[in-house]
Amino acid sequence: MEFLSDYGLFLAKSVTIVLAIITVVGGIAAIASRGRKTGDHGTVEITHLNEELEEMKQQLEEAVLDRDELKALIKEEKKKEKAERKARKKQKPAADEPRRKRVYVLDFDGDIRASDVEPMREEISAVLTLAEPEDEVVVRLESGGGMVHSYGLASSQLERIKRKQIPLTICVDQVAASGGYMMACLGDRVLAAPFAIVGSIGVIAQLPNFHRLLKKNDIDYEVLTAGEYKRTLTMFGQNTDKGRQKFLEELEDTHELFKEFVSEYRPSVDIDKVATGEVWFGKRAIDANLVDELITSDEYLTEACENADVYVVRYEEKKSLQDKLSSFAVDSGDGILTKWYNRLAKNRFISL
Image (cartoon, rainbow, N blue to C red; front, side):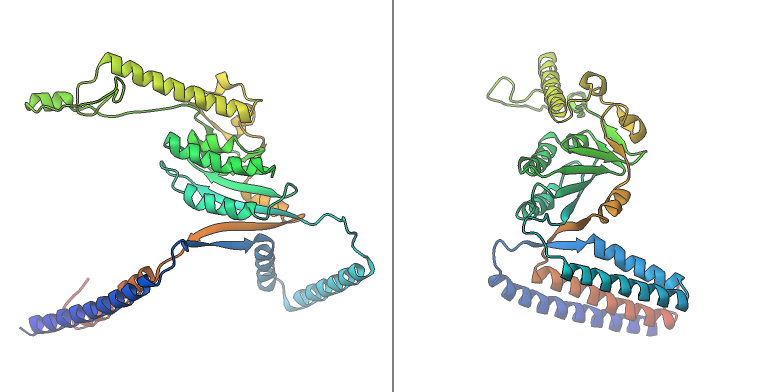
């Protein structure tokens, strides 16, 4: 009975506290939502890669070097900085002296629906407000492909960069296949890790058909259309040879468009040789002109930091006050439940 009494008290307190938190959160969120501005959906976050690498270097030096070595290194760096400042004061910059190059880095991690196109379009819009033809945009691309229309839109976003005549470099560390390669071939340069997977220039469609199962169980399924080819194949109706042939024609046409697209942006590729749906590792893809150089994105960007300012650009969705308060409520509730759980466990009512 003592166990049931303690457990009941624990349950009542937990439910009361959680309900109180939810009530407060709901009230505040409702008030906040009334004054919420429309169109304020997210922010662009910028990371200066040069500074990040310098900070990592300094942390490593502090951990590895002994006191005398570190002291000597700091002294040498200060001396070098002083000399550079002195040289800059003496030298008057020319009015037409070119500024330091800027490299803008975007990330695209593609799923079957190319969901990352939404933040990428915002990132590209932000970059194009400032980038100039002497700069560069680098896209770290990872995708095994997906829906044609989704990756068509993603490719169109990258075309915006090219229309501004800004050099576009695509880096593939793991995979850029099918729709992923549709995006990659837009790059003025396509860089790949030695064992990255690229290619798969083909089109696939598959669907089950349950017509015989429905017929066996005396279930009728009707498809009513206006237009001869409004529906070619169906999952539940009886498919015809005519409908199947029309569907194959549509697949072939999509494949032709894919091949034309790749040929337009990578004319050096023997499209009939590579448009078989096969994939290649980076070391083989370079022989087929599917990529231009074997190098990882980390190595490329680290080298770029030596002669340019490199900025990683990310678009982050803003969390509403309601989302933040909901997260807080969940965390608080978890904390309360954990506290009481540990208390019961300590009293040996619960054991693991």
